[in-house]
Length: 249
Image (tube, rainbow, N blue to C red; front, side):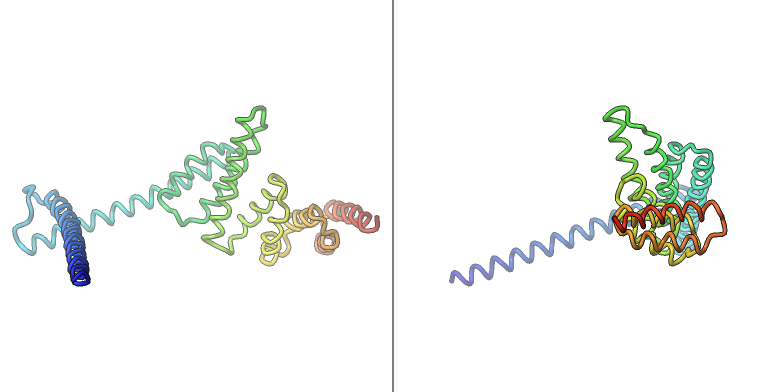
């Protein structure tokens, strides 16, 4: 008898749950239908719903056209914000550029270029905060974190995008003192941009900072063999000789 009561109770609970789910679904569906009817009515010349099937079709087509127009206008607005952000950044107005980039990302969340540009502007703002106070230090740290996150997001969207690879590496080596984190990005970058001497110098420095002296020497040798610029060759030679001296200490 006790087992029978438990079974009956379980059946009642299941029935109530199913009824509740059906009610919630009908309520949501009804809400959507009422909203659609309201929109269609707004498009009707007489302010009410069309009376014929053909009239309904025309009203729905007009409503869909309106949606498409709004989508196109939104996309164009995003383009304008992007252009504005680039022009502001070119003039070193990075605070204003960040605001424009935030608006551009609102309209296009999958544009890797927008996140790369955000990384650049955030890093420049961080470097401009010289740290006279604890508040400045916190702000600088916040902008460096924004820069790092933005570069990483750009690479999530496009793993072959070299600019955020390089930007992130420079951030790790020169600003955040995390050369070990820069090395994988620089190595990958140089498999794509194999003649970028600036990236080779950054990678050589990262190797040196992590006490991987042999690889640092190899990287300077690579620079010496590939550049035709005498000043660059001389700088690479000097750095290589300093590191070789460390090898034999």
